[in-house]
Length: 202
Image (cartoon, rainbow, N blue to C red):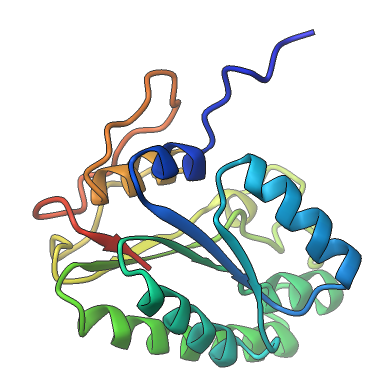
């Protein structure tokens, strides 16, 4: 059996360099909140914040958390598109409505980020969907496998970023934005997105 002692989760690496990681998500049952905070703390996460499920309310909660301690990482979990895709199908009317609501939340966050010269906004997803089966994303298919990574902020280089980015590239990219050395053994690459190291990632 392989040991987990050598794992270096991103929040733990950030914590060792003085950066707090916060997660903002929709409502959770009390038992899930307690268990989630316990497990996330072991991985280095400083706080788990729950808010109203509407995407813009989640964005505003994230802004408040970021304002409490600017230097750090705030993760905002918007799952409306995923839920609508599984329930009604990717690109269905329900999915497009959820995507519109997520866009409004991202615009809210982008406004806060652009007002802070040191902040960076990264927007991504863990998968696509609708390739082969309208309500699923498990089959190998370009529509399922494509992962967007969009960056905004004063420190971000203008124009299109590197092609072929993956989720594995997010941790080293975030560490680079915060000026933290990337641990040896991280499989991803730090994407060349920034003019120079930024002081905060929202």
